[in-house]
Image (tube, rainbow, N blue to C red; front, top):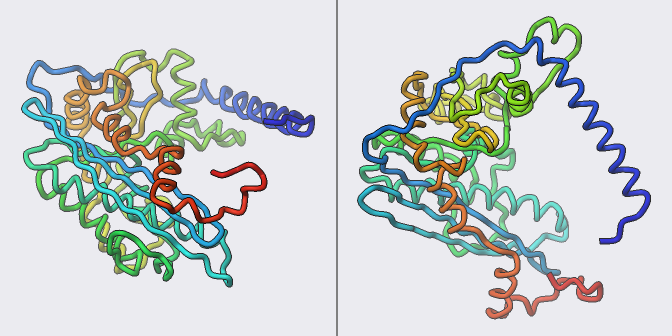
Amino acid sequence: MPVHDSLVMALRSVASRLAGELRTARELLSGLREVGIYELRAGTGALPDVVASDSSHKMKSYSMALVYAVQAAAVRASPERSSLLVEADAGYLVPSPRTGEAFASEALERAVEFMSKSLEVQMLLRSTEASELALLDGSLFYFLWYSKLPEMPKSLRSFREWPSRRREIWRSIVDGIAKLRGTGVVPMFFSKRVRMSHYTKRMLDPAALARGLEVENDLVLLALLRADGRLPMRPLALEPVYIESVGNMPRPLDRLDPEDRRVIEPLLPVTVTYVIFDPASQPYQVTVPGKLSPEELAELLSSLYPLSRSGYPDPLRLAHHACKIGRRELEILLLKLGVSRLPTGREPLGELA
C-alpha cells in the first residue's frame, strides 16, 4: 500500500499514546489486589462429550444490492463418535434511495448477526444428546445483545424464512440457550475479546483509583499480573464473579423493558471467569448461565483441558474452521453462479472485489 508522511505521523502519535496508557497501567501493579486462582488438572477419567458451534458471514456490495452469506457449524467431539453439522443462509438487501447504502449495510450487518447466532444455538439443540458441555464462540452477553432496531429490513430477501421482527429472533436465541440448560448440558461461552470487564473494580486498589489511575479492561490487568510474575505460568482459572441481576449486565441489556427482562432472567445469575489453558496464550473470558461454585467451574474446565492443549478448546477451533467463509472463495462462487455479473461501480479503479 502507498505510505505517506501524514500516515507515519498519525501512527507515531498513536504509538506514543499507547505507550502512555501502558505506563499508567504499570503504576497500578503495586496496588492490585489478589484474586483467587484454581489450577486445572487433567483427570484420569474419560474425556467429556462436547459439542461446539460457531458461525461466519461475509457481505458483498454491488451497485444495486448487498449480498450476504452465512455458514454455521456444530462439531460433536466425544470418546465414542465425532460428527459435523453445517447449516447455511444467503440473501440480499436492496438499499432504499431514502436511507442510502450506509444505513442499509449497518442494518443488514445487525440482522445477519442475529441470524448467525440463532443458527448456532439451533444446531447445538440438535446435537447435544448425551453431551456434557456445549461450547459457543463469544460472550454470553454478546448472544444476549439486544438491537435498538426491532424491525428486519423490509427489502431483505433470504434463503431461510426469518421473522420480520428482530425481537422474535432474539427471543428464540435466549429461549434456545435456556433449553440447552434444561437438557442438562452446560453451555460455556468463550470470548476472545472483552465486552464487559468484571475484575477491574474488584482488583484495583481504592488509593490508586483516588489518584485517577484506572484500567477498564480485564485483559490489561491480567497481562500486568503475568508480566510481574504474580500469575502462575500454569493452566488455571480465576475465582469466578457472578452477575446476579439484569441491572448489572452491560448496556443495553441493563435497560430492557420489563417484558424482555423476564425473558433473560431464567439465565441468571451468570458465572464469569477467565481461563488459561496454555500459559503462552492469552486468557479467555468464560461466561456460563447459572451459578457454578469455584470448585464446579474448575472441575468442568479441567475436564475440557485435555481438549484445549493448544490454548483454546479444540472443538471450537474445529467449528471455526468448518464454517469460515473466505472472501476469495465467495467471490469465485458468486462469479460461477452469475451474481458477480452485477456491477460494483469500482471496476474503473481496478477493484473487482
